[in-house]
Each structure stands twice: as structure tokens, then as C-alpha cells.
Image (cartoon, rainbow, N blue to C red):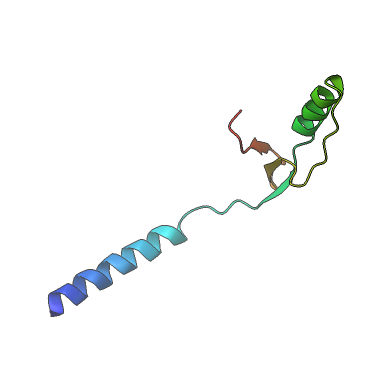
Length: 73
């Protein structure tokens, strides 16, 4: 029983140490204006009106302000 506790304790220490060494990148989310414009233009061509409830978002790293597309496109 003691050996099981030791193994669990060692595993917990390794996991915590691994997570603490990961780099942290500050990021935020903002509306993907390009995608909104594209959808709005397409809707306008078809005689439709879009009302955005949850507009598409993209993640922006605050260090370099590099947008990352969440949809993978």
C-alpha cells in the first residue's frame, strides 16, 4: 500500500512540474471581421439580411497580435 502512495505522489509531482514549465501566451478573442464581411456580402447578393447573434471569433496572441483562425480555414 505504501508503494502505491509513493508511485502516485511521484506521478503527481512529475505532472505538476511538466505543466509549470509550459510557456504561457496571453491571447484574447475578437470578431473575425473578414468572415463577417464575406458572409454579409454573400447574403446581400442573395437578397438576405444577416443578424449576428454569435459572430465568428478568432484568437489573437497579445504578444505579436497574430490572429489565429479557429475554424481552421
